[in-house]
Length: 318
Image: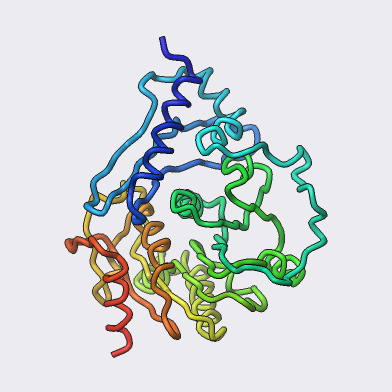
């Protein structure tokens, strides 16, 4: 009979083989929920990898885990997830690192990291896991540093603090070449983004503008925040990519095509997994100034995202 440990080893072996064998366009899609304190609702994790042909490969334990084991998986989620990725031990229980967090320097810093804002949001987690599989250096802004560390181990430098604070932001941006914003709010109140080479914003502005009646009233504040985010980003002078997605849906990614037609985002929808995937692929195409495009699920099949995004960028410049 298989034990839970053997199931974790099965997942670890599967992840290791997939991460090394699949091409650079591989996307790891999963969801690690950060529940409120004292909540024990657990999802048994599975790992889905998407290849260039958009085929899906799923790795999961064969044996159904009992509810008791699921609760233990949640309590011990950090150590088990670290075993999947082969990561070393976590920070001390107080969440602090070995070095003093107040001591940092930008001298001779290599800018090779991707900073994910709102890293404990659902889409933020999807983006982070995709970056981990791509072996990128990842930094994340989170609300609960220790919870994030338990989920992602040392493969992600998790940081909790106020982005509007200049000292905190300065530290968060050390070594960062690109920023991915999966939700609204970060750019509206942020200060200088000195040194950042590319910012990717996942925006719901088209959806908010297309709302009517009571929905328009309910989403009015979100609309204003999204508008401020976009205008602030454009004003920074940093190369940017704004992805105006349709209504984000909890549907499986990699099963549908896409549409990038102007006006499609107002009424269309986009899988959250596909939205996260596009954000990560956008890192490979850095515009000279910036460009904005709409994205929803549709009929167009995309096999080469770098070519697709380059085409959309050139089209926006015409």
